Structures are given as C-alpha cells and as structure tokens.
Amino acid sequence: VQAAFRSNLSYLLELIGSGKESLIFMKKRVRHLASQWLLATQSLAQKLKGRRRDQKQILIHIGFLTEESGDVFSPRVLKGGPLGEMVQWADILAALFVLGHSLKVTVSLKELQSNLGVPPGRGNCPLTVPLPFDLIYTDYHGLQQMKQHMGLSFKKYRCRVRVIDTFGTEPAYNLEEYATLHGYRTNWGYWNLNPKQFMTMFPHTPDNSFMGFVSEELNETERQFIKSNKASNMAVVYGKEASIWKVQGKEKFLAILNKYMEIHGTVYYETQRPPEVPAFVKNHGLLPQHEFQQLLRKAKLFIGFGFPYEGPAPLEAIANGCVFLQSRFNPPHSSLNHEFFRGKPTSREVSSQHPYVEDFIGKPHVWTVDYNNSEEFEAAIKTIMRSKVDPYVPYEYTCEGMLERIHAYIQHQDFCAGASPPLPVKPNGHAMPSSPSLFTLSPNATHLVWSYNASSTPHVWPPVSSMQVWVSEAGQACTETCQEHRLVCEPTFFEFLNKKDVFLQLRIACDSAESEMSHLYPALAENVQECYLQKEPLLYSCAGYSTKYRRLCPCRDYRKGQVALCRDCL
Ligand code: U2F
Image (cartoon, rainbow, N blue to C red):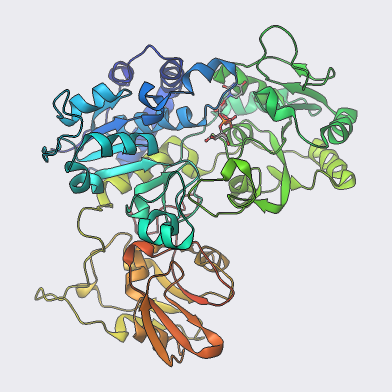
C-alpha cells in the first residue's frame, strides 16, 4: 500500500490516549504544532513529486511511560521534571502520522502484549508469533519488555526495532561479547543490534541514526514582533527544577549578570521561592511550554548553568531570537568522570552543556565561555547585549527537516537484510571478489574516492557515490577525521574499506594484516607497519581512538543543515 500524506492530526490525538500528565503534555504539543506539521507535509510532498512511498505498519511502544518500568517521568511533568523525551516522542508520533503510516501506540505492558499477539498469561511464549508490524519504535525500557514477552520472536524480529536513545549507544558497548571482555558493560548496552537502529536526540555519534525533534519556526509577523519587543537587558535562566540552581560559583557569575540584566527564571515551586533561587531573580514558576516560549521571545539571553545536558530548550531559545550562553567543560564530561553519564553506553566527551549548539550553530547565537573566568564572562554579556541576533532554527530541527529525514530512514534503512549490506553485485548477479579498483586515489594522494562504474555500484544506502576514505591521525576518532574534511563519518561504508587492498591503495605498507575484533579497526600501527582488519561487522565504529592507531575512516558528504542525509540520499 502507498502511504498518503495526512492533512489532519485529530485521529493521532485519539491514538495517543490519555490519563497521564505526560500524554496530556504530548497531545498539547502535537495540537500546538499541527499547522507547522501540515505546512511541512505539503513542502515535502512537493519535493518528492509523487514518488512511491510504502505505508508501514508501525508500533510505537513508549517504554519509559509504562507503569511496569516505574514511570517516574509522568508525575514530574508539572513539577519541573524532564520533558525532553516527551517533546521528542510527541514529534516522532506527529511525523510518522503525517507521513501517512499506520500507527498503534502503547504505553503499558498489557497493550504491548495484545498488539504483539502474545496470548495473555503467556509471558514467555516460546513460539514465534508472526509480527503484525514492519517497524517498532521503542526505547531501552520497551526493548527489555519486548525481550521478556516475545519469546523467540524477539530474536527473529529485532531487526525491525528502532530504539529512541537520547544520548546514544556506541558500537563497543552494543556488542555483548566485546563489551564484557573489554570493560564496556553498562546497564543499558549489549543488545547486539545494528548501531544505526539506535536513534538519538541530537546528531551525537554518526554510529547511530539521528532522530531529533522539532523547534517551532516563526512566521514573518512573529519575527517582526520579536524585533520590536526584545528587551536587551532581559535574561532567562535554563533550569526548571531547583536542584539545577545548586551550581558551584553561581553567586559570582550571577552577580555579574545581575549588574547588566534583569534575571528571570521558570523554576517549579510549591508554596514559596526555592532557597536555591536568589531573591533578585524574577521567578515565574514552571510555565506551560507555550508560555515559556513567549517569555523567550522577550528575552535577549538564555543562560545555562551546566545542567540539563543536551536538552531541547536552547534550540527553542535560539529559535525565539535569544542568545544562548553556556559554560565550557574543561575537562569534558563523560561516563568516565560524571555521575549523570555513568552507566550510559557511550564514552562521548561532552565539551559544554550543549555541544550541538556550540558546534553546529555557534556565534552570534551561542556563546560558550569559562564561567570561572569573570573577565571572559563579563565581556560576553556586554557583547551579547549589544548584538543583533535573528531567530534561527537549523533546517534539521524544522518540521520539514524532520519529516524529510524520517521519510528517508523509513524508505531506505533495512536492518533485516543481513548483518552487513550486500556485496557489490555484477550485472550477471555474481558477487564480486574484493578489488582494489573500487577506489581511486585523489590527485594529492590524501584520500580515496569511489570509482566504480554505475552499472555495478552496490545497492546500499547512503549511496557509495558520497564516500571518501581518509586516514585518521594517531589518537583521532573517525568522527573527528571526517569532520576535519567537512564530511561526516558513515559506518555503513566500513565494509568497503575493510580490505588489505585499500591500505595498499592509500600507499600504506603493511607487513601484516590480521583480522581481529576491535572497535578501532580497520587501522594501522604506523611504527611497526602492521595493519588490522575488522572481524566483526557490528563493531564498525566511527567513535573511538587510540594513540597506537591510525584508523581508516569512511566519510561521506552531507546536506547543508541536514547532517543525517548525503547529497544524493533522498
Ligand atoms: C533534558 O531534559 P529537560 O526536560 O530538562 O530539557 P529542557 O531543555 O529543559 O526542555 C524540555 C522542554 O521543557 C519546556 C521547554 C522544552 O521543550 O519548552 N519547558 C516548559 O515547558 N516550561 C518551562 O518553564 C521551561 C521549559 C533532555 F531533553 C533529556 O533528554 C535529559 O534526560 C535531561 C537531563 O540531561 O535533559
């Protein structure tokens, strides 16, 4: 069946159900963004010009909202608790719905079981029941529940699962055997999925797929309104829960800020001002999302205290014409040195409260400074107050950008076709032997580009035409290597360069070329002229570095404002 774009969201509101604060929050958000979704749908439809899109049967099981996993979030919705995950789920639901897919939404174990066709009371049903869904979007909690209640079907169908995973899962943590042997075992990892099945809130590591969420775009009238109503001396603090205000050195930098600006907060409180919030702060209490955004429209500055990490609010602030000021983390925070990230299946180093806005947006919208350096802090405030900054939403965070991305994933990502994508196939249907002529060396001999002629190009997505092979410096991850060349690492391509011939073509002399399991391979140890190939496709990883190795890196181009997609990816 072809999917038909939808032009009305009211049936989705029914599907979401009710009874929990979290669901009420999500429905409000869907309703509020409805007109933006519908406009975006029209633009995408025009762009795709009637191209065939298959309608998928999709189950959306939001595990963290089930009673069975404790549902600690719903009771905190109106008390300043995390809302980022609900923002994202609301947007995923809206996007899948307007794209025209057929959805079932579950937020309890009972509903999950009945949708999976598991007979009640047959928790560990050993049979493989045919799965009535092409795709299942869930989270780590939901994954656990499915494993427990699907019996053997889980193994068979796990390639259809997509895991919404805020901070990301790196390959070294995902492969159970490897994680156990090498100290990457955590509470969450070890599912042996294709790392691209994990979908993140920001484009953290290219090993995962970037799902994202949306930030509301302003129309011309709203932009004009903002221009004439901005108070250059008004600051809003990022932190709706009082605990966020317990930050070291706050007195000093807030005193500086207070010299120049009127400071506002949206901190939840029951009866009186939380003691963590100084008296000179004008506290509005926790605001409904829409009113919070209205407050941002008047403010000049949105200031972060270091927590929460990587949330939606800074994007909303920037979308409403604020400058976001945040602290640089030196040394960076990660699961190795910070309680919040401990046990999360990633070693990613977080260089500031919000590395995405630091790296992808930057000045004049984003200032990342050392809060312990009073001069630097004060100078930033002064410059920000004088600056003229327009509202800005990166394309990948607009409704159209998110729709375009999800559309591409649904049409092209297939993790059921086998552990690794098919080998290049000759026109007569025989798999080709590995051949050094897959690539050509660039004129200045720095990297390889794909050279195969079109008729025998392998059917992978992203298309290999977008590929370039670079060698990292020692101690550098492929993520950085590709970034340095204005490209992005693309793990799907690792299989094409995991060959001895590729080293030769790069004019690297290998005395030996062992095939072993390591998330850093393929790589070379330069001083000893040893080359290493990857034995386990699930361990192909953009993340990861060691001073011992220079890694072979598969990079690809990307669309401006849409890093998840290459130029020819749509
Ligand atoms: C992040 O979760 P948070 O919920 O703490 O993230 P925020 O950036 O604060 O924003 C979530 C939403 O809260 C809204 C605002 C954002 O869309 O519009 N809001 C509001 O409705 N009223 C107010 O007064 C103030 C804000 C992150 F998203 C999670 O993934 C992490 O688990 C968490 C911890 O790092 O941080």
